[in-house]
Image (cartoon, rainbow, N blue to C red):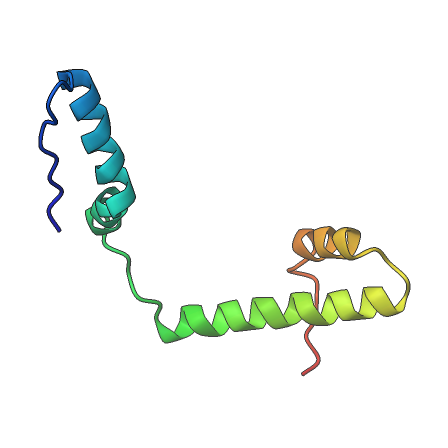
Length: 90
């Protein structure tokens, strides 16, 4: 995608530069460049499995704590701290 800005009659170089940089930022080009700078690796099956298990463990732990009357933020904080000791019964 190209971004163009022509100088308007009576416009200074600084104003032209500001207008151009504003258009450039709004065009989304800088975001695309940043995304393409680093190659993102696809998740393999083991990583997907571990992430699913992690999410299910936290979800089941929070559901138990909410039934006991705990606050959501406290339950989430505690689940993240003790994730290795949580057993998933599913």
